[in-house]
Length: 89
Image (cartoon, rainbow, N blue to C red; front, top):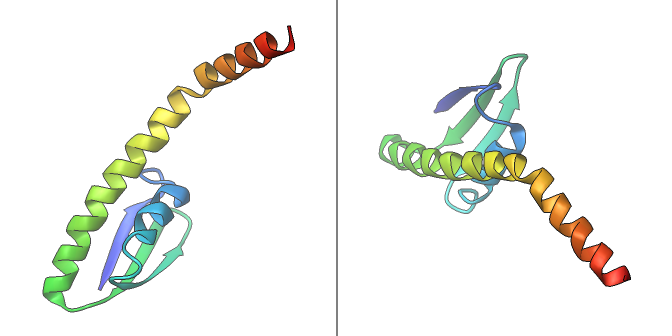
């Protein structure tokens, strides 16, 4: 079974983090071309439906975490700088 995702939709890090948590349950391989990620999964039809459901849930989770991390990077750096400045005084 195969799943295709556009590269602009998910980063490799997001895909690999999501797939990591499915690794013990399913055999999968991640490949790519210029525009898409290809996930090849070894399982039967019912397991594939479960795989898709779990993967979509994890992709949503890690995609939101990635966006949140990206959007709060400046704030985290400012907090670290202030804490280090306060420690040095």
